[in-house]
Image (spheres, rainbow, N blue to C red):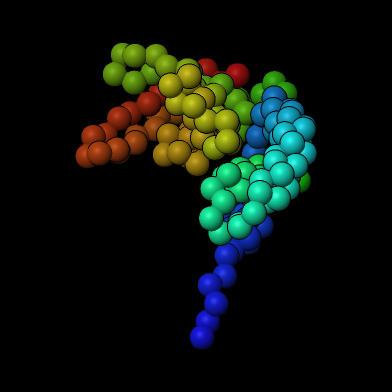
Amino acid sequence: MRLATRKSEKDRLLLSPVDHLVTAQKLKNYQSEIIQLNQTRIPAASEVARTAAMGDLSENAAYQFAKQHLRSLLNRITKLENLIAHAVVINSSPNLTGKVMIGNSVTVSCNGLTQKFQILGSQDAKPQAGRISHSSPLGQALLGKLIGDQISLTVANKTMVYTIQRVE
């Protein structure tokens, strides 16, 4: 008979690919979140001990809830520690080459519309705010291009032609 085993959070982190490119601000946010979670962990652990003292653990809903809460805190801390340990901060120095690189803001025109995108890691991407991932189709197409270059991108059977106007 084989016993059921639970994969630890560390094992799951190794299996799931994560983009480690982050802005300096995102790294600071991760560090602040770990501090806050560690402050929350101590009361959560004492709550587990308090509810465990109530009696039968298999029938104790308060204990199960407290244990799950503590487990989720510890999992998030582990994930953040992994992200911080492997983080690669995106260089935000001015681009003198004119070549599109990660961390640059790129102004493009397409069908008479002008849009500005900042190319970042997937952790910082927020397309609605103009921040796209370097691994997105548009981000991949823009990387390495120069001002004046045209990029043809086909998405959902529709081809869009982008012209690079400015690289900052």
